[in-house]
Structures are given as C-alpha cells and as structure tokens.
Amino acid sequence: MRLKTPREIALMREAGLVVTEALEAVKAIAVPGATTAQFNDAVAEVFARHGATPLFLGYPNPTKGKPPFPAMICASVNEQVVHGVPNHRPLREGDIVSVDTGCRVNGWCGDAAITVAIGPVAPEIQRLLDVTNETLHLAIRAMERCARWSEVAYLMERYVKGQGMFVVEQFVGHGIGQAMHEEPQVPNFVNRALRQNDFRLEPGLVIAVEPMVGLGTKEVVVLDDGWTVVTKDRRPSAHFEHTVAMTPEGPQILTPRAD
Ligand code: MG
Image 1 (cartoon, helix red, strand yellow):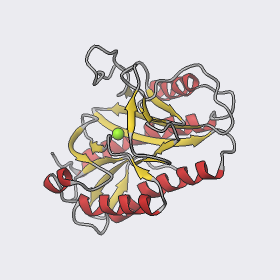
Image 2 (cartoon, rainbow, N blue to C red):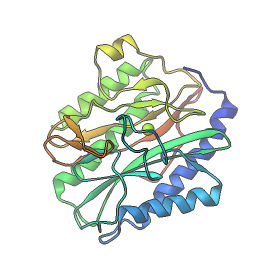
Image 3 (tube, protein in one colour):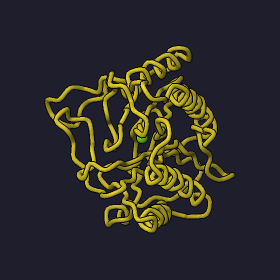
C-alpha cells in the first residue's frame, strides 16, 4: 500500500466532492415512484458536468462468464446489500435504497455510499439506517485516536452487535487512490486475517470505510446476475461509505455530506 502526499489527497478531495454532489442529486429525487434508473441518470449528469470518469460502469464481474457492471451506481433495494443493478421498477414508500458510486477526476478516485429512505419507513428500518451511519462515523472518529485499523474494526463490530444487528463480513472497505480498489483491505470486524494484515493509521493513508449492516443476519447470497448481493434471510440491510484520508491533523472525510 502506498501513502498519499498532501497534494494527492487534495486531488482526491476534488473527486470526492463530485461523488458528494452525485449522491445529493440522488437524495433530491428519492421519493415514491422514482426509479433507480433515474438515480443513475442523475449521477451520470453530475459526472458529465464535471468531466468525471465513472468507476463502476464496465467493472468486471467477479463471477466468470457474467456481464460487467452496467451502470454508474450500485442501487441495492431493501434486502439487497450491495452491487444492485439500477432498473425501472418504481420505488415504494417504505423502501430503502443503498446507493454507492465513485468517479475519477484528474487521475484520482473518490467512492462513497448512502442508504436513502423512500418516504417514511418503519421504525426498525430507520434504526437500521441510523445504526449503520453511526457505525461509519464512530469509525472515522476512532481513527483519530487509534493506532491500528483493527482497533477501529473492533469498535464498529462491538457497536453493531450491541444494537442487536449484524455486520456483513463478505464485503469490506479498501484502500483507494489512482485506482478504486487498492491495498489494504478494510474490514468492519476483527478476525484472524485482519490481525495478520493489520495496518497503521498514519498520515497519507486513504481508505474507503464502508460498513454494511443486516437487521437479521450477516449471511449473504449473490443472485444469478453475478452482481446483486442479498441477505440470506431477505430482511433489509444498509450501507454507508466515505473516502477518508489520514492527515497530520487527523482523519479527513474526502466525500463530505450533510448527514
Ligand atoms: Mg468502496
């Protein structure tokens, strides 16, 4: 893994701000009757206006023989955890949609995700969103005082479990820079692999922190399209992500938003 210079981090913030604007454009149209295809169009418009290159469109499928990713956003509805494909089905009041997107600007990448509520949602669903977003933010706050990532991951896992929810383990955060996915892997829980591949939280480190939380299970299944990941129990899950840089002044969110 390669640490970034202050100038490189400043360039990554430019990409991150475009990602922020794209997600804000989605939030503005996230109402009953809207479609995730419309979300994708809104993001495409923002990227085009900034001359940003989408990172997800054409991304190779991890399953051999399956098609590359066909859109600029992942849109994962309700029981879908991540990597959902946008479509033309109207969203209904009470749905939640995890929207993940990334772009490259002047050679540097930004990546972020939010889960939006479509109209009012059930109290337990709202709590799922609140817990998942808080898991992300407690991690970023902890990066200020923790020396190594495993200490942060431990806090994330402990918090989610304490809320009676489940950290999805199949997918993890990642280093990010000129490529969207760089070393290291950034899990939201502690296991032996993390203890062996732990890393220091030092200035120049830039990572995408992205907890995924399930209401009923951490077990997930990939659907036949080779992309869409759903919870095994088909209960809802949420996903929030920021690109975060470690600086001498502490962690800085490169994809800042108003939540
Ligand atoms: Mg990511």
